[in-house]
Length: 165
Ligand code: CTP
Ligand code: ZN
Image 1: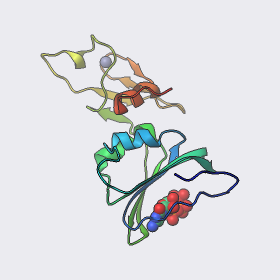
Image 2: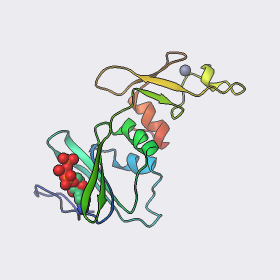
Image 3: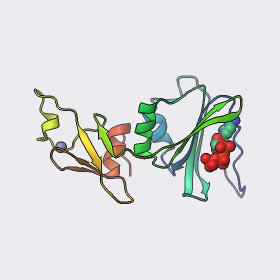
Image 4: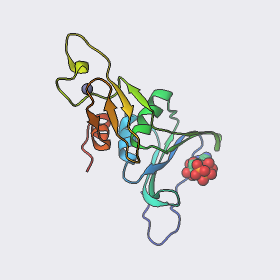
């Protein structure tokens, strides 16, 4: 890790090939890695930059992972904790694709309703969970079946298995 000091920019190498996830809300880089299932023990070269200045977000995190590419399903999950993140695909040191992540309007099957009596939690008649995004700045999703609302913190906890303070 590199320490910030007075430097305007942290020096973190450009990568040759892989994925750069940029504009992650400050403090969520580790949650993004967790969603990707990366622990660091897989052997990939990973750079984690946290709490650096960003014009757009004030502070942001960046994750660079060599030789890993993120599929649509994973990108959708990441969008739930890092809305507005940018997913850069790098080949030969060049950004060959830039995907702006956006939180989905509807989420089917990924999240679990927190209401224990919700029809989606009946053990015998499994109905896939389905949530719709509520308007507003904060990420909030409402269960289509029982109306229960998942707050951003609930979503992070569910996706990462960790409490977010
Ligand atoms: N990057 C990298 N290795 C490369 C190319 C790019 O690590 N070989 C990183 C850059 O450091 C940056 C991100 O990927 O964090 C996106 O690169 P680029 O599109 O060149 O930067 P910006 O134009 O600043 O991106 P944006 O407009 O999305 O903020
Ligand atoms: Zn429900």
